[in-house]
Image (cartoon, rainbow, N blue to C red; front, side, top):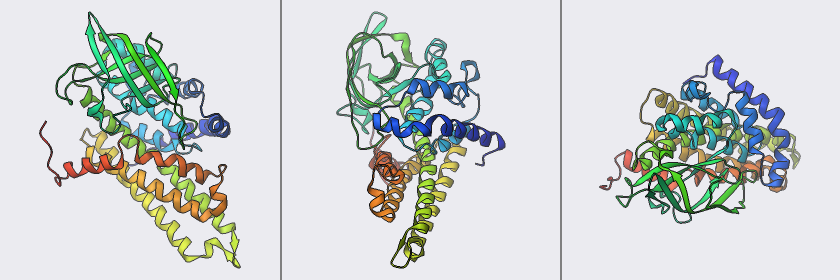
Length: 385
């Protein structure tokens, strides 16, 4: 995959918005531990950036997924991880299934306002007892007339304290765990929904993360996305784009972290020379940049095949795994080179050290990625379902 002039123009537009409207506010939003998502998304929506690969009839760009990937990569220019993640939830995590399988009514009611930046969405999968093990979710939706009545909990839900709606995975029958789930669009102002707790985290401070309770919440069955019982399959498809987004959005933070560390090392004097004069420092930073380029090549290849309609479960899982581990290595190594300065909150390297740790947990932990790869590569036998 190679970015065209059109890809680069989208990246330039996004970078201007980041430099003018996001980065100047990042430190304040990090300190407040929340960012004004409706304001941010309204600006992005006005620029046509929240639905690049979504259908034009709902306000999207009608472009192929490589344009969404270019946007994900440029979001790495934001000087924290929480705000890009909030945007990625909107563009690549809570809307793909809605765009692919949602009814015309659902797309008009939820997708179009999300693309315009008028509504904030979130994806409700994880629960207190089910994170990476999606099949273990316990939230239920029983039928009552033309409605579903939803009860349960969702935890670690990004954007949920400000969201207008949730794309929620729930059990809609007592069948097998991989065939009894459905995705349901749930407006977050319905009776019975309690935004119970804002979860404080060691990183991603500007991203609001909530524990949400659902107590007999009544939702029309017409708010279900696609077929009943297909929610697990739809969510697995959404995960592929989420994992590609994770890999792409990790590239610039690592590159900028390395670049700032190089500049620091060339200025920092110790023992009669600069830190950059030390061969170990030179070699390690060169090696890290090489690893970032290798990840970019893997991510671009996965994206190109995804655009062609191929199943990229293996490559997306590889890219997600590598992105999480490499982010940890880059942040830890660079922080070490910064010494005491790297251990301060104001330092961007320390922010990547905190924020980047989530990449090996969220969207499927490293061990889940390895389990997927062991099966798709034929190393482990797939269990019968």
